[in-house]
Image (tube, rainbow, N blue to C red):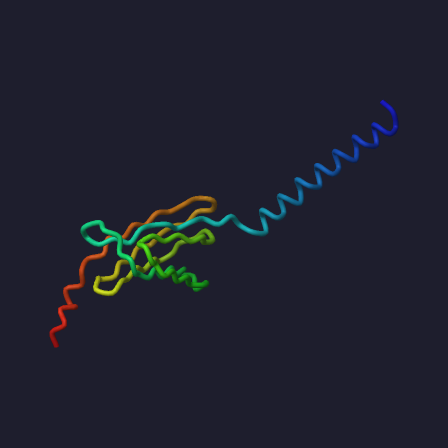
Length: 122
């Protein structure tokens, strides 16, 4: 093997090793996010066009609010436990604790019940 070939081989191995190390450091610095997706529906399983989804992390980190326009919602979240609150006008709200795992999707399809207290009687 010539000196040039040997130098090229050593340089290639060094660059490959450095690239793998940098990629490993980047993966450690930013944890993979997971996804939360679902569809807000009524008791007859029909999508509720206008709803709100509030995603709260009990550890006091940032809350997320999603305005649902077609019944469906999806958002990326850091791994952890979340309280997910869903509400829509004319319906009783729903809440569920959801675990989000790195690189995985969690599904929450709340079925909201018509609000019996919205009869308009005072």
